[in-house]
Amino acid sequence: MPDDNAFRPAWWLPGGHLQTLFPTLFRRRRPPPLRRERLELDDGDFLDLDWTREREGPLVLLLHGLEGSLNSHYAAGFLAALDSAGRQCVQLYFRGCSGEPNRLPRSYHSGETGDLQRVLDHLAHKYPGRDIHVAGVSLGGNVLLKWLGENPGQQQVRKAMAVSVPFDLANAAARLERGLSRLYQAYLLRKLRRALRAKMANVKLPLAPERLAELDSFRQFDDAVTAPLHGFTGVDDYYARASSRPFVARITTPTLIVHALDDPFMTPDAIPDTCGPGVILETQPSGGHVGFVAGRVPFRPRYWLDERLVRFLS
Image (cartoon, rainbow, N blue to C red; front, side, top):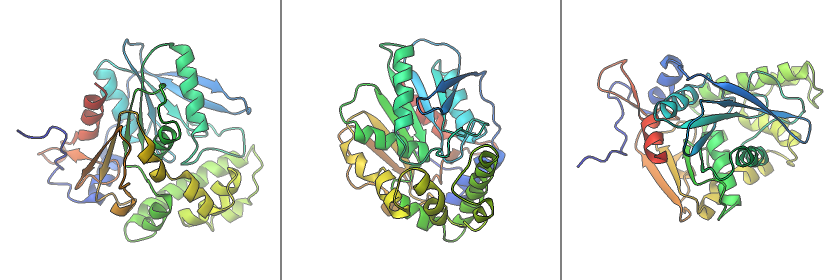
């Protein structure tokens, strides 16, 4: 019998780059109706949450990737798929990613689990006794896996799924400086610079605006911006402490990790070789970075990740 969990890439989208680029460029964003909630934080900042309609059953919290938003193809897709399956969802936007700059010099990063904990506490207070499932994509998946590994045996999250996780941040930064992967680095750095310039209109940062243009790699950006703004001694300290790879072996929560061996954001040796007792690691030969586009007819795609998420969280 065929394995329903095996991804079969569309024949007309061979390789990691086409799998990565197609949904980003061509997928229609059709999220369900959403209600915005603002969560005020103790440090004076805020987090925004988007809620789908009220439903019974487990609540699904979604975590986006670097500079992600509702315009990210996977975010709208996950919300629509889960809503159609009868699940209530809440999309967390990391600081500064909801369409409005956050109030503090600090923002978010790959290892920031404190804000996730704050949101989980909020959900538990809002819906006491309700099961919570969490799905994280790319950077959001790294945050999720790190939190799960930091809290083995926790009872707040009953099930988790992480997709296209940059397990080893140093590996990912190096990979994104090579070949066609430099296109993704350039695209994401443009978004990061734009967000910082918008913030600088109201928040003083220890960085001159003209210096931003000189930061043309993630390693340079993280050394000059991410590390000092978030209490790390430098880029190597940040990458070592924020990478989820060392934490995966400690996870006891039922957790599905989906990863493609041709992900152009990192090399296959970034994948953890030891997983905790709760982890199912599904490595697919192809799928790119948050791609996983199937379908026999050109330009009539089937987004396998949506199906896999609904199936696992069911």
